Length: 335
Image 1: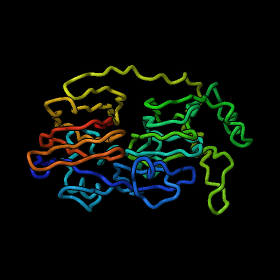
Image 2 (image 1 turned 135 degrees about the vertical axis):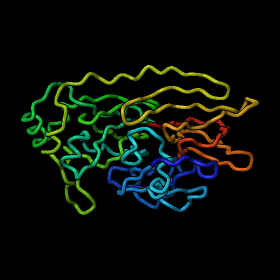
Image 3 (image 1 turned 90 degrees about the vertical axis):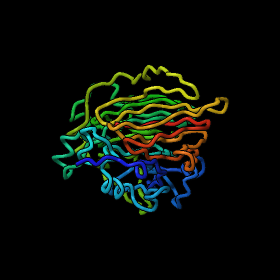
Image 4 (image 1 turned 90 degrees about the horizontal axis):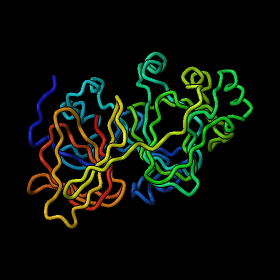
């Protein structure tokens, strides 16, 4: 049974991420986003996560010091009434710093993961390019139709790269990566990733690398072949982005799918007499991920949260009324 929020609980709170030291990562999450996590390299920060492989911690408010999972287990009403919430928080939000190419990989859909990965969700995801070096690129599907046999052979002899569709990226690009799409994040790219709450990745090709112990990382060829879309893909187009202006802010829809919705908010109240009102409804929580700038989220007369580049704020469904002030660019994630 979903309980109704009360004013003293339905308040936003800052999150503190879990870190991952995958070998392809760099230092930008600490250097540029002030994560202050003692890992070298620091490849990913799981900003909003209830996944057991990387739990976010609450960093402000009455729940400070607890994991986000503990708080949402105790307060399921924070999630809202959307039917996707029957299994808990449906999304996982990350920052990813690719100092080197990630592996060529693919994720299963929900049905395959449920049957083959102990009931896990699959993994459909979206990338927002926070920054990219000149000439940086991603792999996105195949440039020609493949067969299972041809793909297997190309993975064995290392020729897979010639069949991948390479796409040059730049800052503020958006890429929707549906489960089954073979893909890889390239060197010099910093992204925010919004995905299903899953940690299932089938690694197909890892560029001949070895780990810190000199061993190749595990590959998952057979499962990858089971789920990979083998057809040629059109080059991904950037979505039509229409800014909706209001005093002190502008918003644009970046992505909407069955698992999540992502908007970009441009906040600029420095020359406005009024701050920007903000409140969630009963259907969904919202997560604010600050990509640039800084600001404050005011809760009533006496409480506020200051946020800076890289910060992540969870706002429960049916929240108290709030006001935003500052100059910042944020992703707003909901379901």
